[in-house]
Figure 1 (tube, rainbow, N blue to C red):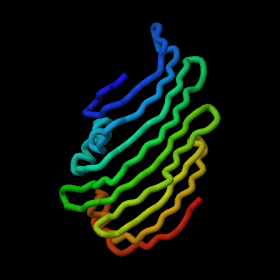
Figure 2 (cartoon, helix red, strand yellow):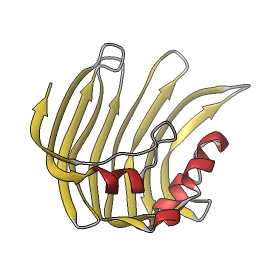
Figure 3 (cartoon, one colour):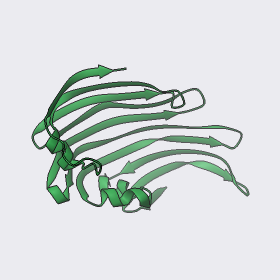
Figure 4 (tube, one colour):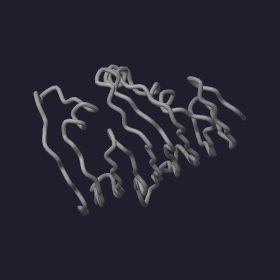
Amino acid sequence: AELALNEMDFELNGDFNYKDSLKNMKLNYKAKNLDIESVLSLLPEKHKARINDYKSTGEFFANGNLDYSATRPFSINSKFGINGATIEYIPKNTKLTNVVVAGELHINKDKTSLDLSDIKATLNGENFSGKFFMENFNDPFIDVTSNGTFNLQNVYAFWPIDTLQKLEGVLKIDGRVK
């Protein structure tokens, strides 16, 4: 089957059993021709105000499967990412370009993990890259790798923090934290 939601197209296949409530469901999905703005439109209203000052172009992708039964824990396995995106903070005309993210999400009764194995972007000409891995969401183990040079004024211009009046300096990072 195909599903359209907020200008996003999904290919779906699987089955479900519904009798007064959802008894079980096995669903495979593949998102087609997603854009970042459509995906962000699904955020709760309280978060939308913050993102209204941003515009973006680029491709978002997601595919995976969901397995649910009322008698056992659900599971989800998903691959997702962003290819070649540009995100602009409109009030300051500050751009994050060449955005690439490749990720996987796994949730089942034995394991929970989020793996962002490839993160790359350029903020006003400054490149950065990294990786992020977290497993066991109830008692997290986190592994972060980051490399880049950040002019903190550019970071603040792209993502203002209302409790700060000024942020300046240069942050160089090439490290890993576990």
